[in-house]
Length: 375
Image (cartoon, rainbow, N blue to C red; front, side, top):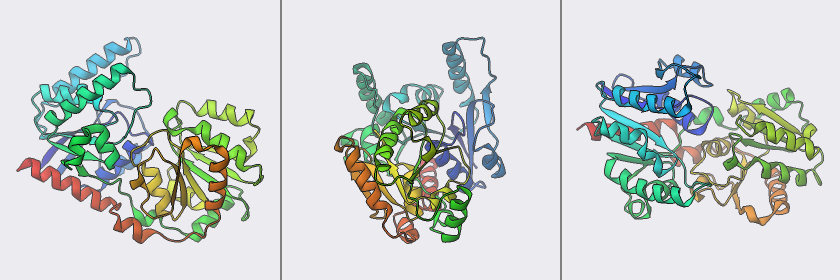
């Protein structure tokens, strides 16, 4: 049995969390003990699925609001140092930026853990100050010294995390954001049921988006574009799935734009796959992104998509994605979205599977790397 220290800060509905859950559900538990380590013991969005798969989180701290945040962080760091020494063979970290190597991965290395997996899930940082640029540059050097194995969800994510030189050498493994393809395959019956439940008429265009309400996902741009769409498609519906710190601000913006009656804020949902069936077109105008799981899910459901050019071109796995620059204007975005929404939809299951986005395929890749590290 290979014991793996797998640090997650929670099991919310985010992309890294969904990847982690999918990996846990499909990894061979008779050979690998993927132990989720969390900061606090709290009930999160994916907890029920995690428990149903046999998972048990290990919380290193109790919630203590009386202590300053920096003290809590220091206590957690010390407990990570202590815990990782408890008979773990490998430590696995999902990172957003290179500078993150100087936090818990470095602590684990100092604690004596020599087998460390670094997995890149992003391709950019929107608030990269001069100081952070320096730290990210140093972080790339440190990663290539510390990491025993390197994963990336896309080539862009590899360049961002490991540096262009190392990415060109392909000294990393591309781990696709695999999913249960059959659950997302286009289904007319589910489409009809979901549109009926949402009160959507057959002739209404439904524009969809799945993502955390955070700056990088660019919801303010989504609402501006949808306002433009309503000029020619007055009964169109915008379905937004997700939660996050900017959700209240986006609800207020929808009110200011006077489009509230056409926008459905759905929050967190367990059946994203079924909501995708109800949509006619899927959009991701992200400011930056690696290879978004939500974008893969949308294509698996047969949807035509419009993504920002900041997203890796690898994200087009079915040939049904249009890439637009954010500087091309809301009129161009609106007209492209409308045109894509009217294209006949069909099953893309075969293309998604062939591209390697089956969860079984991605899980076997991870297992293969773990086996190599243990030899």
